[in-house]
Image (tube, rainbow, N blue to C red; front, side, top):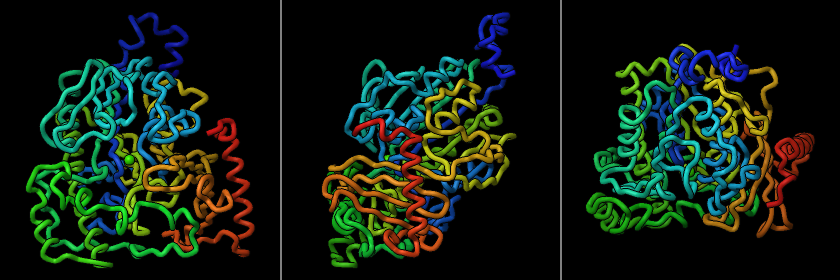
Amino acid sequence: MLYKSLCKAGVLLLVSSCNSINAEQKRPNIIWIFSDDHSYQTIGAYGDRFAHLNPTPNIDRIANEGIRFDRCYVGNSISAPSRATLLTGLHSHMNGKINNQVPFNHDQQQFQKILQQSGYQTAMIGKIHLDGKMQGFDYWEVLPGQGDYYNPVFITDTGTHKVNGYVTDIITDKSLDWLENKRDKNKPFMLMIHHKAPHRTWIPAERHRNKYEGVDFPEPANLFDDYATRTTAAQKQDMSIDETMTLNRDLKLGDKFGGPAGMYDNRKEWFEKNKPAGKELVRWKYQAYIQDFLQCIWAIDENVGRVLDYLEENGLDKNTIVMYASDQGFYMGEHGWFDKRFMYEESFRTPLLARWPGHIKPGTVNTDLVQNIDFAETFLELADAEIPKDMQGKSLVPLLKGKTPANWRKSLYYHYYEYPGVHNVRRNEGVRNTRYKLIRFYGKDVPGGEEWELYDLENDPSEMKNLYGDKNYAKIEKSLKAELQKLRKKYKVDKVSL
Ligand code: CA
C-alpha cells in the first residue's frame, strides 16, 4: 500500500508520526537544478552545433547516467510565468502569473506546500523572480528580481544580505551548505537550486572570461533571416542581434556592464582597432554574444559537478533524483535573434535531464511531448504525495522509468501574453503536435486582429516557411484549429478573461 494511503488510513498512528518512518521508506530526495535562459543548443548532451566547442561534462553526466528529454516545452516562454507554472502545475491563465509584471499570488496551491505536509524538507536557493515571501519552503534564500551576477543580494524570510563573489558559485555554496549543515538529515528533501545565469547580459566568472579567444562559432543558417512568408510579429519584434543587442551593455564595450573592471579590455581594444560595420558587425556581435553565453555555462557546469560530487561523497547519490532544466529556451542567433517569447522551437523548447540510479536506465532518450505543467506533479509522485486533481500536467515518473502510458498527450498548448512589452513580441498562442505547429498572433498591433502561421516541422525544422493558407495543407490546418479549440477547453482558457 502507498505511504500516503497508509497515513490516511491511520495505519501509521502506531508509530509516532508518518514522518518518523521516512528513513525506512526511502522516498527519494529531489534536487532540481534550474538555470535561466539555458538553451538546449548549448548543452553538449543535446549534440547541437556548439557541442564540440561547448563541453558540459557535468550536465551531460545527468543525461548519460539518466534520461534526456528531447521534446520538453514550456507553456509561456518567459521567466516569472514559467516559474509560477513550475510551482503550481498550472498554465499561466490559471495561476494568474501571465507576464513578468502582474503579482504572483503566493497563497495559492503549490507543490512544495504539499511536499512539506507529506514530510519532505523543502528549500529554494537562487532566482525565483516572483516578488513576495515564498511559501512552502522550510528554507529559502532568493535573488531579488533578476539578481546580480557579481556580489549579489539575497532575500530571506528575515531580511536581505549581500555576498561577495560570482552568483553561480554563491548559489551552489549556499545549496551545499544547506545540504551539509542546515537540513534535518532524518527527512527526505527537495532542494531547488535556481541559477541566474546565463540570463542577459551574460556576464561570466572571471576565470572563464578568455575560454574562447580566437574561436569561431558556427552561425545558424538563418542568422540573416528576412522573415519572408512570416507574419507581422516576426518582422516587428525588437530582439535582434542587429538592432536590439547593445554594444556597451550586452557586449560589454562600456564601463558599466556589471562585472569587474578590465575584464573586457581585450575586446574593447579589438573593436576600437577594427570597427566592424554592416553585416560584419552583426557577425561580430553574434560571435561576442555566443562567447559570453558559453562562458556563463562553464560556471553552471562546474557547479552542477560540485553538487553531483557532494552527493556521491556523502552517499546521497543513490537515493536522490537530480533533474536539470531551464525556465525556457533561447535564440542563439537563429532568425537573427536572442531572447525568447515566441512559440518557435528555440524558445518554446527547454532542456530537461534527469538522473535517478536504479530507476532511470542510463542513456535513455525520450521524445514524448512533455511540458513544464508536468513538473509539479512529477515531484509529488516521486514523493508519493497526493496529486491535486486541479493541476494541469501529468507526472513524468512513468516516462522516467521508460514506460510512457498509451494515452500520453499528442499535442501541447502554448500562450504568451506580454504585449505591449519589452522586445515587442505580439501575443501568441498555439498548438504543436509531433509534426506540425499552428500559431495564432492576436490583439493590439496585429493587422486584422489576428494572423496565423503553420509549420511542417519535419520538412522545415527551422520554421522558415509559413504554410498557413497553402491549399496542400488545408486539412492539416483545419485539424490543428480544432485541436487548438480542444486544448483551450481542456485547459479552461476561455474561462479566464485576460
Ligand atoms: Ca528566463
